[in-house]
Image (cartoon, rainbow, N blue to C red; front, side, top):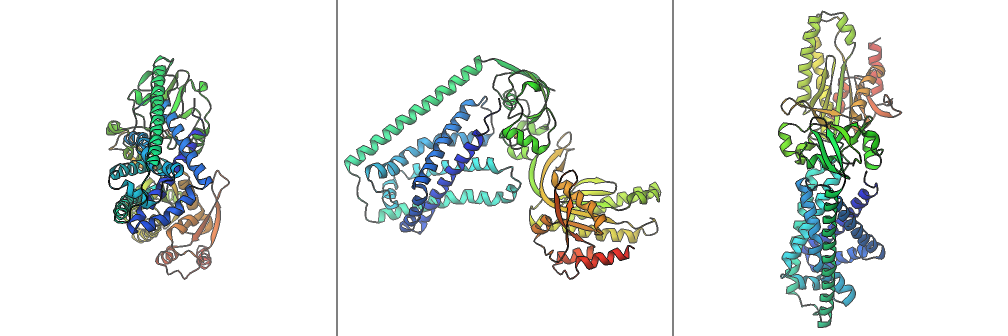
Length: 566
Ligand code: FES
């Protein structure tokens, strides 16, 4: 059965709230490098947020929801084969309650129930240096658990690769500064007058509370272990279903096992770039028999299948748990040397990664007329020459030719992502126009008409994947709506009497000055969506945009061009 739709978002959002709490806590520690008094000022703000009735309810509610749902997920696991980072995340997550228990007793419980001073000076005096290593371990473990979780949530967002380095720097810097602040403030606390000592009654009360918490935690841990053992025994005794994989034969798995878990249990290579979270679609399978016995896709699975326009009987292996025998075929390949490293996220991501890119689509005008009026040999020479010149123009600007056909090409600029890619694509468009001019001079007389091209450029998310039988012969290809739009903009060049049509999105990201140029809304085929785009009549005007020296308006250029074309 597909998992409940609310479980995953609830687990994710409760985790994000806890991560926000940990982040503010660590940043507060980091202020310790400026002294305890600065720390205490920030602590007041932090308490105003997390100790207020609303903040405290949200925080404790999130802790309860997160612990409950992660435990539930743990117990429901059908296999313990999983990527290394997931193993680490689970180990860190399970360690947190044991590490944090003493800290809660000495701060929140001591302060709220026994009137012990909870201000930084007093707490640091008690912690430093005897339990400093324990505190530091807690800090690193809790932070790492959150960072891995956040990475899993964000890694398939198209903007994530652009921000990856910044986020890694923050992920290292924040705990480092926090530890530095903790050490500096701990030393300062001992150089100051000691705070009021904890009385014997207070100590006894805190120790009692700590013992109670330990008892509760031990009971909870024992309960979880018992449930895990029970789930394991039940799985062993439960009825089984048979999954018959095309190319791998039948495997028997306990009822309730997802298809992806079944593949992992039986060492069947099965891509799962998002680790089974229903975000990447690389695990999809074609259900060859028994599809009608599966529940209809809904929730995470339904949305993702809709988004990729999956055909009937294509399902996400990580989301379906067959209750009857099924036959299926894994759709995405895990190739050659990858099989040994199928859990290696970096490797798998290369097989289907969504990221932002600028796509350039170029098409030769009047190609049919050209082929009808020329000898096949002349056309063959022209196409070869054209292909190699255009490829060079794209690669010189850091792009990659994604598709090349006789009369045009599609190029993707995704390194570096963002503004630089958009500018590189526009520079490449101008270079191509120059090369076409040179070709026209070179082969003048050999062709009945000069060659001309229209170029459409658009920026947005594309899905990159490898196509091919093995690593050596495979090539990277881009898919997605951004390509459709770039092709539509190229087609619009003919109607708009413009050599280049550049989407407003590309213009915005490129940070070049397009002001004064006219825009048009261009309908995208097969949808009711319109894309606003700039008309750039010729390469001179494009050069002015690229050089920031634009003086000609689009209207004048187009008028001149329309007149010249008769
Ligand atoms: S593994 Fe990513 S959607 Fe199934």
